Length: 134
Length: 125
Length: 296
Image 1 (cartoon, rainbow over the protein chains, first blue to last red):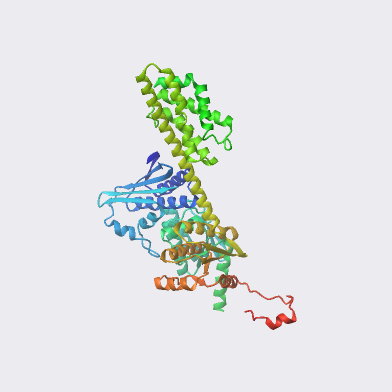
Image 2 (cartoon, rainbow over the protein chains, first blue to last red):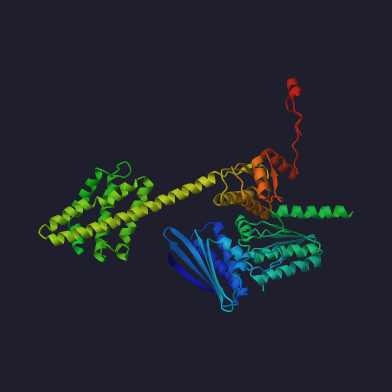
């Protein structure tokens, strides 16, 4: 698997979240993802970027375009040095309750991508990596 | 700071969301809608999202909140024009936006709202 | 390795001619490729080999010196895959270069056994690797073709029919797996927008089994349509399916289901505020009155 290109974006303000998802859109269009796949990836990016900002107290997003044989894809890394997630299993299950409930949007985002991995340590921060293949 | 304009048409509020909203803008819209319903005595709110290419959980909750708050203030809300890719993604995310009525177009949305208004009038006479 | 480059350059025309001749017995396929085109391809390949051999060892064909050569071979191979050459024909195309090449090498080193062996060994290593490159490119193209055909098949098998103004029908034939569901969903939703149809009837007469997964897929489709402002009605529910649904405890409370497409259509018409009225000018004969059934 090769990384063809990479870009890092800060996630410090809510405008950064908007710019991050617009950037993901640009890259996805460039790689000629279908409209539905683009939408899924950009939405996942929006969820995870927002998490990094709101729960993780700010961090960064790294976009990479990948090539694996004949497959091409996009990988997104979300990193923050925030409080971390104490119970990852639970967080992945916390979907959206109908109405209020903040939810971390993790479970939902996981369904929008092909590969999802998460590392988190209380007090240290969280790293989430997702991949969507074409 | 820019705001999303809330237009008035008789007893309806019309909102067309055409920009990629950041969170503060979305929260401002929620406030504005509730203010205007009180101020103008609106009985219906029509939100046109046909230009929105992304609806994530935050925006989804905003729409649900607007519908719920308007209901408490005595107004119906209809969200119109959701794009297919957005609908598919929302379902995958697990958001079904219960409590939010939807219609395919602004016309269909207005029919729903006027229909509801007429029924309300009939009931009260 | 510049020996190899030199040998090829000095004998290019002859090697090429013999190469083409050796192919005409087996794999030329004059029906698929013209002599002129073949000649040009062989010329280009020989030149690319010379260029490659000059920059790097024959075993390092993944290095940048061989980039043009690899690209050229991949392109030729891909176009042959599309034209309908068999994999054997494509590999043999490259491998049949061995004989004329070895002949030229033997001629040059007729008096030096060691040089002869070394150069032939390098040449054979090189051509084997190049043959593998072509085979890989061939396979990749075929896979791409198959994937594309699968996609087209998927799309063809989910037609959308406009029953009336604002009422669509989607007859689904075959199993409803997650790949199919995506296609069905996208087709359905896009048609709903394009035709501004508030009602979509999903007919599952042709779906052999409905288990929890299939039900989930259907529910996703219905929810997505609802989010957009359209209502789905499921029709074609066979008795066995109804039993399975109940046994599995699948909750279809929010979903309207009908046994027959006709019933679903009637419901959609009714919900969209239409009634069907028999026109009084319909011709009837005295006999047909005897046999007329009451239509509700």
